[in-house]
Image (spheres, rainbow, N blue to C red):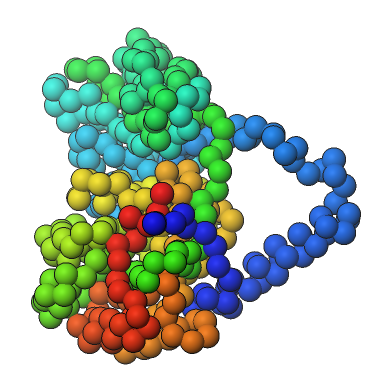
Length: 393
């Protein structure tokens, strides 16, 4: 039966990421040793049943994070605005705090200039949403809650900033809610800053390089998406290979039909690989959250299904990556323990491929020859490719 994803040894990370991973692992080990030796007092440790701390779960709440060059053109990081760049943009003119705010000018009398984001929540939990706004008839609300939640709104801030606040409770099976800010018809421009969704922090995602299972299966994962060849597509189709694709949003949007075709076999899926393929371990948590959440939103819009797994570029991740992934509603951060990209045949543990191994490949001009080599290695070990998503829960 499918098993839950869990961690394996850091030795299974690629050599190119090991240099990044080892210092962090050493630091974690040192911290654990201090706790075990009593250097940290028991009073300093969290109680076993302590509630999760209250944090701001909003993505890019102060509109301070710049857009990636690979993001949707004109987008506001963390947000989707109905009128796009024709209506919504970041401004540095008189923000409520920091260096910038969101400025929205509805392009027609039929537009409210709505901007939204998806916020990961826990079931049956109460949250407080707030935002500072400026303008006439500005609204702050949440949908997808346990029961309809009246929005907070103001008739007129008279040229200054005013705080709007509303509370909502998530449903019994809720994983996300939709947070929105908008104006009203024919009421002119408005501005938003310092958005908050205050509630308990979700538990960090789980990092792993493989899936513990006794089934004689391996998992083929293919990253990026810039080079899409008919030869690779033909091999995947002819062999009915279950593929877990991790495309970046830009190549995915450029050729969605290709990714739908190569993930047509049962068990295949399309998962999250960030927006810009940056080394996330070099970014603060807030910027990592933008990278992961915006990729989630783009892929969901393109393919209709939200990703559940995050593959960190270069296999570079840290504790903030695990929290950022959780804040975007993703429970699994996946690396790999074998690499068959660009003519390689690297297995980062002793022996042949093992049950549950995750094989790294890339959408490149060599994929049509990399896939047969990976498949031959799996067959030599008595294994067959399987769909990753069905083994995660």
